[in-house]
Image 1 (cartoon, one colour):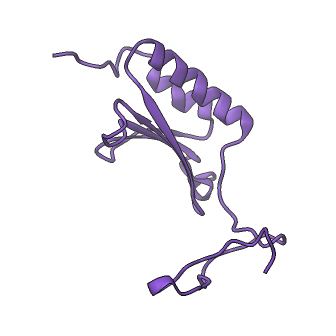
Image 2 (cartoon, one colour):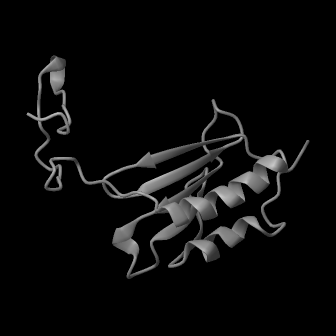
Length: 129
């Protein structure tokens, strides 16, 4: 076992290695990530919404099948929106999608900049009571 190889714990603290985990030659698990350009586009939208006072926190999850950028109004709540990258859908509906809290897919496409345009309009505005 090398320093780069992850340690997996099974039930009751036993060391285990999942059978379905794909690894790259270095022994690391293979995950889907956002590129620097994609993160730059996402953070430009995120920064505008933070300046407007609508969004306050975010989380980035890099999973085996997709990468997710979640946006929160408050840290303790469910995410308002999830910006997802799913490479398996790249040739079909598009790898990028914006998903609402309820799970409704608001926009899906092949280009991230076009998918993020959903946040530019006044269509998705925070309603203050």
